Image (cartoon, one colour):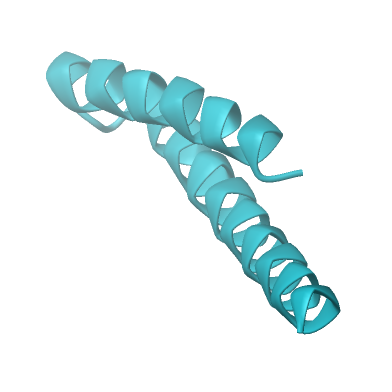
Length: 59
């Protein structure tokens, strides 16, 4: 039973890490977009940093 629970938790962490990576990359692209406002770019940068922290936590 514990092995199945551990396997499920591992899969969940992998999925969360993948989603965080995707979100981080999207936020990085917004942060680099010169057509976006300064506020939008700053928020995207902040979100990318948070996504990176979550990405590390889930790997």
